[in-house]
Length: 338
Image: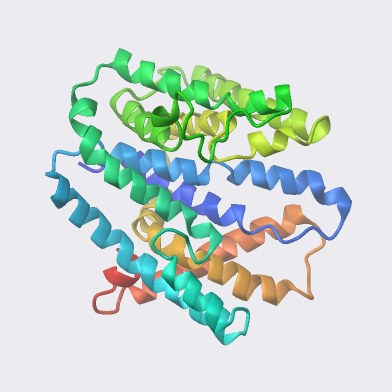
C-alpha cells in the first residue's frame, strides 16, 4: 500500500536538491548570510533521499540477487545515460580534452563525472548492504534499533573533536580504522529510515508536534549559526552531509510529513514530482548550470532572496517538463528511471 507522506517527502527532497544547486555566486559580500540560509534550507536533501529510500526498501524480503537486479536495473541505465550527456556537453564545448574524457569514462565505476552525482554512489553502496542486513532489520526491536542509532549519532559528534584538539582525529569521509567505522556514514540514515517507518513520530496535539519540530530545527541550527558568527571552521563540520544538524533536520522533516496532510491538489502535484524525481535529479544540474545560470549571467536579479527561489522553482518545472516529455519515449525507463 502506498503511503502518501512518502511521496510528499520525495517531492520535497527533490526540490531541496535543486535549491541547493540554484544559488548563483554572490555579487555582494553582504549577501553572504542569505547564501548560508539557502545552503541551510537545502542541506538535508540528499540525506532525506537516503532515509526515504531506506524506509521503502529495507528490510527486503527478496533474495539478494533478485533485489540487486531490480534496484540496479532502474538506477544504472539513466545514471549512465545522463553522465554521458554531461561528458558530451563538456567535450563539445572544449571544457575537457580527449585525455580527461577518457579518464572520466575509465573512472566512472568509482567516481562521478559530475560532483553532484556522488549521491548515486552512496545509494549503490546502501543497495549492496540492504539484503545482507535485512534479516536483522526484520527481527530487530525498537530498543535495538535505537541502540544502533545512538552509536551512529555519536559518530556525528566526532568531527567536533578535530576542532577541539586542532587535529584530524576523525574523518567523516573515511576513518577506516576508527572503532565505529562500520556503524558510521550513510548507513545510519538507512537505520533511521527503517526506524521512522516502523515507529513514526506521531502527535495527537498539533501544537506539541510543531514545538517538537521547532526544537529539532533549533538544535540543528545553533552550531551552524555559531560557526557563521564566531568560528567559520565549524561550518566545515556542520555543513557536511554526515553532520548532526542534517540528521536533526531529516527527523524534523519526517515528523512534519507524518503528522500534517495537504490538499488533494497539492498531493497530486507532489505525486507527479515523486514519480519522476530520479530523472529530475539527473537532469537538474544541466538545466540550472547550462541554461538558467547562462541566461542570468548578464542579467542578475538584484537579491538572492528573490533570485535563488526563482531559479529553483523554474528549474524544477523545466526539469519536470523535460522528464515528462521523455517519459513518452519507448524504453524511457532507461533514460529517466520511471
